[in-house]
Length: 536
Image (cartoon, rainbow, N blue to C red; front, side, top):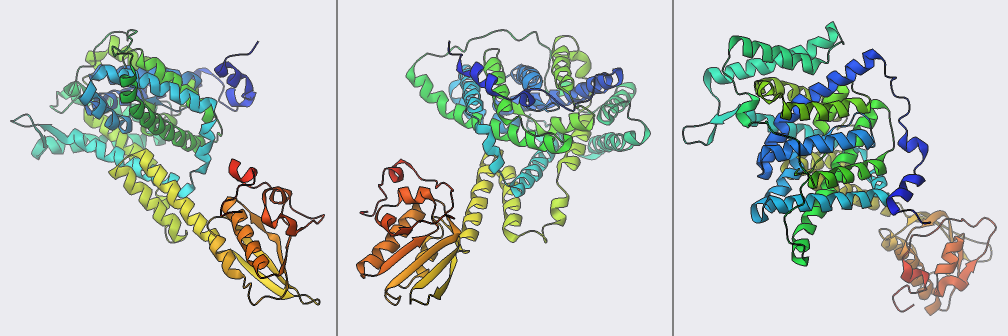
């Protein structure tokens, strides 16, 4: 009996991929740390979820339900213990167009489809391609996201004006707000030097909130954003027509949201992995994100992905197991059901202070010190990704960074190809090719030879080269054609067996050797069938 695709995939995963190894044992002390870390994260999730709901143009509970459901499911089955997921700004800015033009029901349908696409990405092991993201891109991503988090906190320094529009705080209100933010940051900085029994961010929130409530200080509070009171999320099938027209509307948004969500989640996975010393879990994270978003779409949530800010809060607070993420989601649900009035009294200044400390901890300050030491291309890529992350969005920034890095790498390798040539006692010229032969170096390869001036016998030795792609094969075919047209003898040495099979016109010119390499050539079906183009 053939198992379903998802079940078969799960069976193929290694035990180490699903078993959390080298994690702290659940002692009473560890449980307390995990629960307090979860509580701290939950408090920070509330204003973020509400704010991103406003950005997407949906009710605050739509964002809060997403933070709860996505956070809970990914905490239970995600690829990395300690990661926190929820509604994010990168997704909200994409959703707002869909909600504005078609309504929130289309958003729910899109979130479900997006989740299915992410599950398929996990089953197909597409998460492994996150390895292609170079380190400069990672640094640019981290720095850009830190700046984005910082800029998002500035909106908390705005209050409604007389005409209802947002205006910047001035005078004493601004001074008090800044003072409370600074106090929160100071507590977070000092607390670890005093005790580790309570997460420093939680201590900062509790102390500042107690001061504000006890003295009745008039400052913006969570309740000023919106009421977070609500009930349990209810099962809900999106009220959209089941037609091809609906599919045409939601597919583009689903693809974009799936890509953004997976890129942000997998980059966060790597970042948390560097801090906690864990590796792997990319495919598992893709599936977890997909299942979480599919469920969320059926329970009236806006979907989500990994949140680097909240993940950093959790890790810095001591969260190392799945318990912290699970407790964060459950605490958030508790806030919605029974503790909304209390949570709404928390001053926004305390949460801003926490997030600013996250900014300081997230920004890769060492990247500024090494700018003069690393290659200019890497420095430019790092800066480019940072700027694009701030000006546009994370997915575009990462794609741009990877493309620029790939082009720089290709150009660097293209300039490496050269040849050492010598004459044999028999009067033949030998070209010993150095460097990889691929699409970027084919012009340089062709310029090495001078068929008209070369003697009647020419040998091309590829011992120190490597044939990479179809363009390389085509370049060899073209070279063989030139010498053939002049009636000269050309021999090709030290090419792999793969090249022997794929080359057409030049195939009979090869000389077999016991030390021929055995690598494969990355070519498409047309090459394997002997169709190299150019009339050959």
